Image (cartoon, rainbow, N blue to C red; front, side):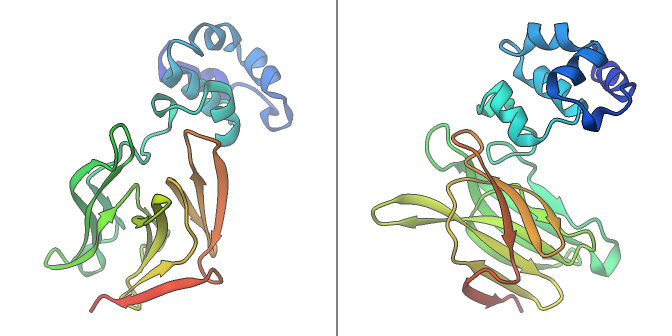
Length: 217
């Protein structure tokens, strides 16, 4: 069954928001397919659950917290460029280079540069993770930045790129592996440790303690 056919079946279910997981699978006619693929094809199993509007935490608990079950993009696989999708002089692109695993089989890190107007280039960090996310107006971006403590090993902080103020704000709070998803008002929505004891994150970038603010001029 193709992805299009799966979504067509899911979209045909009326009142899906008030149903249990089993009811969604049963009413859509996708139960048998899901049962047959949930162990041998985690990507297809995830596609079925996403089509049926299961939330990310539920999907992880059902199909397992493994790299091959993660939604793309994720900390192990993300594009080399992330654009704010604006035009001309307002266009900004975060460009990744020299990406490599932080440890064998681990998430990626590399150099992240901010490119403005296709000419001005600012280095955000030489130890950035991904994926980066942008606000809807394209004026702010959140980027996971790797750091390392002497005893506890590598960890991540959130870096906030602000094009209006031309600043990079690094926050104090530490995370294991961030999977950034979206901005919602003053909150950055994400998951921490997406393959091991996943936690939902709502990060208030207005009120969270700040480690440092760097001017990008």
